[in-house]
Length: 144
Image (tube, rainbow, N blue to C red; front, side, top):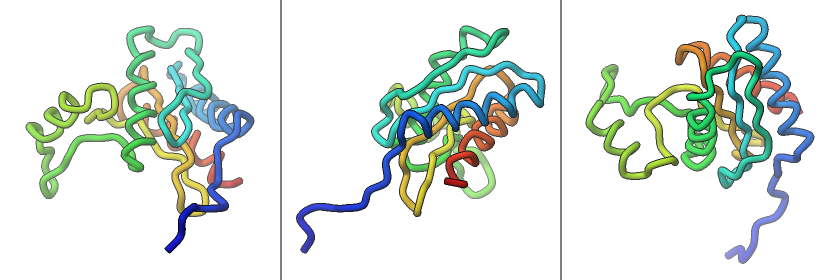
């Protein structure tokens, strides 16, 4: 029986900035200014930037997406029942765990060696655009 774990990778501030930068580059490519939040594996904010022109109303949403992805260890999005959205469950989870669950896509965990080390949340575009930008940010750390 192990009493402690060892060799647990951690997201550094430099790594968080690399994720943020990659997301911002993708945001510029698709010409949609974004709010981007990067958190550690416990959902604590490491870096955040609101790009010029990004909707202020999406600031909190980007952080919730990042926190939810980090804490759930999975990308954000609606709960599914087969190939259909399970609306009551998706909304119920978001209400039950306010601030740590969201049925809105755009939060992606950051994974290294099979372990979640943090997450990124992007918001201010469509869900597809938000997810695209978040995935671009996450790809920067996967290369590490």
